[in-house]
Amino acid sequence: MPDAPPPDDRHWFTNLIVCTIGSFTTIVAMTLLLPFLPLYVEEIGVTGRAAIVQWSGVAYGATFFTAALTAPLWGRLGDRYGRKLMLIRASLGMAVAMSLTGMAQTIDQLVAVRLLTGLLGGYASGSMILVAAQTPRRRAGWALGVLSSGIMAGNLVGPLIGGVLPPLIGIRATFWLSGAAIFVSFLGTTFFLREAPRPAAARKAGPGSLWGQIADPRPVAAMLATGLLLTFALTSIEPIITVYVALFAPPDAVTFVSGLAMSAGALGGVLSGPRLGRLGDRFGPWRLVALSLAAAALLLVPQAFVTASWQLVSLRFVMGAALGGLAPGMAAVIRHSAPEAIAGSLLGWSVSAQYVGQVLGPLAGGFLGGHIGMRAVFLGTAVLMAAGALVNFALERAAREGAR
Image 1: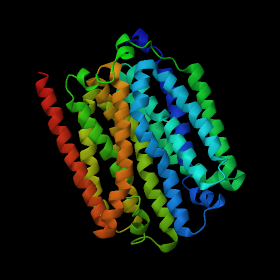
Image 2: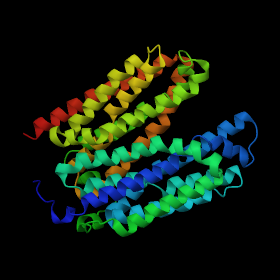
Image 3: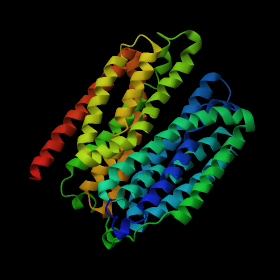
């Protein structure tokens, strides 16, 4: 029979369930607009194909822009005033923002509300912080793997729901329904989440004391860079995927295969997250991070030379399964490398780094694909992932030897 968790951790499993459901719900709400966003942009008055595409990109990216800017702030405030409070803020804020999105009458209002969504949101990242801090260390990797699977499931299910609901109930009603679903998560967070009392050191930590409280900053710095690499690798093919698939897929199946290839990676991550998190608990989360990067680098190379749709979909699925260990591994490394009082701030910076990768990935992929060739996107990303793996292997080994 496993040992009972310490008193302060007695609610960790309930917290994990609440955070996983809430993260899934909010991620679904953030991604369900992907299939119909151009239609909504046109509905509120934008005309011309180029303008619709341009404003759709601006409206979608606006949320991640403000989220990247505010993630460290919410992390620090969570350290000082409580992470449950930040989750209540995020769920209520997103419920309001999603409802307002369904009321937009002009493109300016839509972009403004999308900016507000990123500013008020952050439920999934806040959940990662709370679960990492409140779960017993021996179970942290598994718990973070479960939460990571819930987040990736939201990314997988969101666009599917967004393709089904608008024809049935309308675009605006789809936003209102998603706002109502997030409000239910707000109620669950408010009444069922339990957080241990904040330590005095966390409440009194000054703004300049963050890095000074870390005995060895190398693990944390490595995880910030790895977070950027993770989202860079996942998003670098987004601008070229449809054109690339057209090289070997039948013309009437290009969009289907493209969507399948993008979803396959998320599905692989959903299935592998808890298992890889458990391996991280057993063999060390930093080693898991390095191995995940190395596996992803190897799997990117054959993707540059596929000749059939099933090959690309299969490789994306296996690569997604390999990357499923990165998010829980990174959070566990930060949790183990820093005092609990500043864990939220550091995990907030990690989230910001991931959002930066989400911006840089498509930009680099579009540039390489347009000027050098589509194979260069896969091979260039593979080189970056391999370099990240080597650096993490070296730093993990040096830290292990230094601890002896």
